[in-house]
Image (cartoon, rainbow, N blue to C red; front, side, top):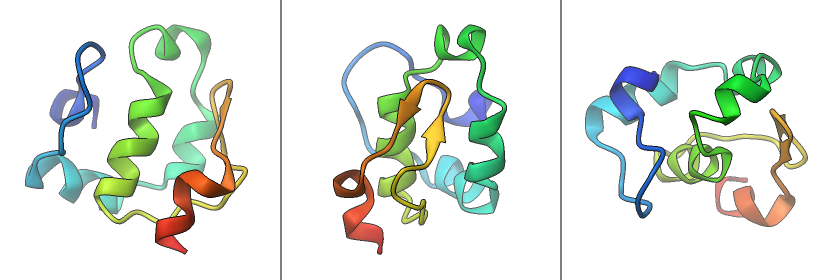
Amino acid sequence: MRRICYRKLGPEVDPSPACCAVVKKANVKCLCKLVAKEIEDLIDMEKVGFVARSCGKKVAPGTKCGSKEFQKWVFAILI
């Protein structure tokens, strides 16, 4: 996923179709449990939420991804 969707720096941009294809297959809840500080240093968790939302991925409000907890408003469009 990181290889296809990675972009730590710069503005949020719509993910590519290839990125969304990977995101749609991913178990976000499981992946988020594995996010350590080292990963957060490489990947912007705000952008993880943006990409998930942009790809239509449903993520439960309150899902914690690394040290970031996604609030209800972040995923309200998906529920």
